[in-house]
Image (cartoon, rainbow, N blue to C red; front, side, top):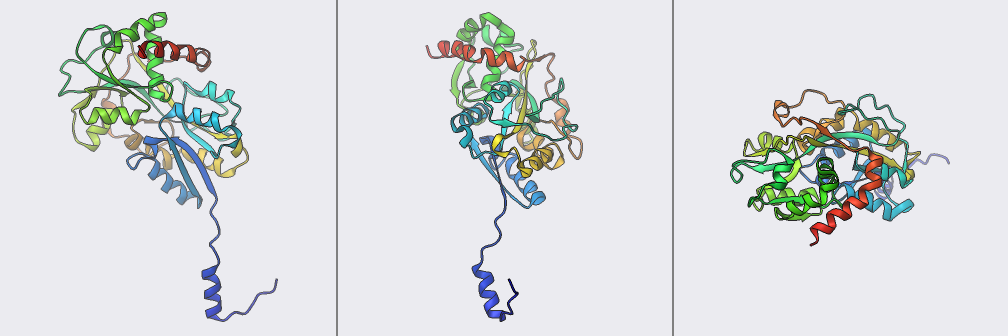
Length: 333
């Protein structure tokens, strides 16, 4: 087509009428606290969009287990290019759906306790589950999971549902690791202390910070938020003698995005400072990849588990439904 010699007025009119070139969009499914205004989502969205010149669309559900449930429902019709917020306890089930594709990126920046090698799932942070308590309401916190479960007291706790929440599933596995076949009896004893079971972490922690409940299932890293952002040591994590259950959060590309270079770019970006710098003081977890500097010294002063508790992903997949049914049969009484 020949170039046209337009008058300035006509050229301006045409430029105004013509839409700007559409930006490529990458759609990421994640969980609610990640996308909240105080979570890492807004910072990461801004940083990645500046890096890629694209549009990063973050779509959230209540929690990590809900992510997998949604993906199963949508199947091959999902709009997700990346799913961010599954964890080590779900990766076998997630792989078995056939809805995820190999990441194909360099993961040499990744460093998590015990190591992590997988051709599909890429860690972005990690932490240990813990019961966080209000020192103004709990004078002497339990020193073990067995003490929390078995000691008669008026203490009330908030926990999350293992059918929809990764912390809820983490507690289920923590109880199994400590009690084994006696877990149903342990749940029965703990039931009297459970004030509420929420679908996700955000609801439970909100009840805790508003004073509705003095102890909540969360992470050993949660008190870092209160110390750094609020300047208070009022909220602490109870250290349990049996050890604490490890969570490694991961992201993966869907089959829909198998040949999507933008998806590869995001996963690679996720392992470096542009993403990882946002994790410690917005997601309040330990970074799994490379940061641009050292963490706040507060992170060196948190509960250090005496033992890391962990089930192999395949064992979880083989037993999760039965273990959830055990939990449900007790908690629904």
